[in-house]
Image (tube, rainbow, N blue to C red; front, side, top):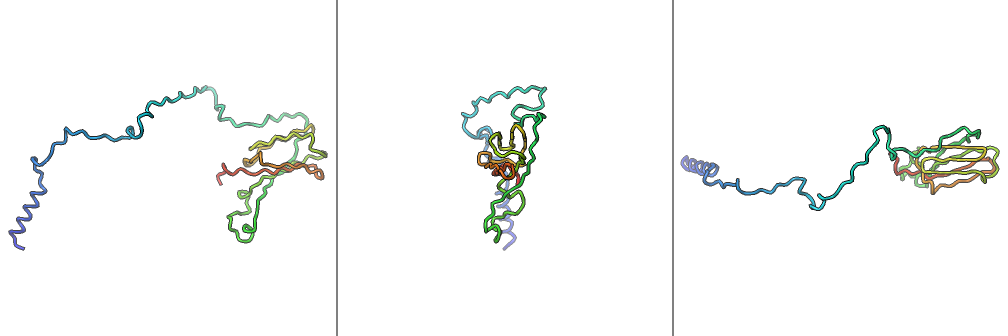
Length: 184
């Protein structure tokens, strides 16, 4: 390679890379499309009317929809409050016992059934007991006993079972636990 050919190659490269004003095209008059989030989607959605927000009373602490349904206020009417005991039940299979393949453990977070035993001494029949079971609480009324109880978990109240035990004068409730809202 000679020095002359190197100079010619360098000059050719310089001509290619130089900005000649005559080679440039004027693009100032060309319209460019503008893209922004407002042009995405159909134009029909722009004419949708949105309902005005509900006017809130500034003196209220909570809105009506924020209040949780509460059990009636427990008034001392002379009736005895029934004693109760809450326990849990777990459906265990052989794979749980011997192989441990289901991932269940003996804690209450893996239990499927909430058991509520309500002691009603002196009662021989469930005839006069009024029992209202909701997904978060229960209310028991009898002319001798009363009980208002919130559950530690939400339950499926429609799938529950209740049985009165004559031998122990107690009412046993078995309620499947609703784990849909539990964080565990």
